Image (cartoon, rainbow, N blue to C red; front, side, top):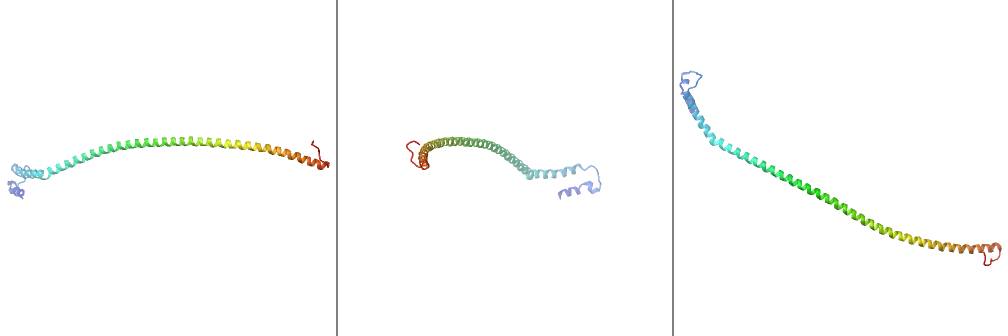
Amino acid sequence: MLLSLLILSTPAHAAGDMSLFPDPALVVLQTIPFLVAMAALHAIIFKPMIGYLQDRDAATAGARKEAAELQQQADVAQSEYDAKKADARKQVVELRAKARAEEKAKREQRLAVVRGECEAELAAARERIDGERELAAKELDRVAEALAGQISAKVLGRELGGAA
């Protein structure tokens, strides 16, 4: 409102004269309220807003830096974890292989003992069978002689003496 009063009270407006160059006094009078308004806006709005934006930018940059550091620490921890996991898996594979080898050796040892026992029983059974076969052969020979003597006696009709 004050500005409009200043504009209307100027000699150029009152005379209705339109000139290309403004009145220097009018320019100064109009510049002063603008500068006062700008100073007030700077103090009231711009300075706190710039401070807030700078603080927010600093906090964001700090948070990003902290997040980057935490991500780097997490990556290091993940790589250590992966390395430990790989070592653990390698140890598990080695332990399983060792356990399998030990079990295989024990099984082979038990099989050798059982085979030895089976071979011993088989050898004893063969000896028993051979002995029984010899006895059966002797018995068959004796029975065959007796039958031959009986058959001869029946065919000849008389008993044979001691010679067959």
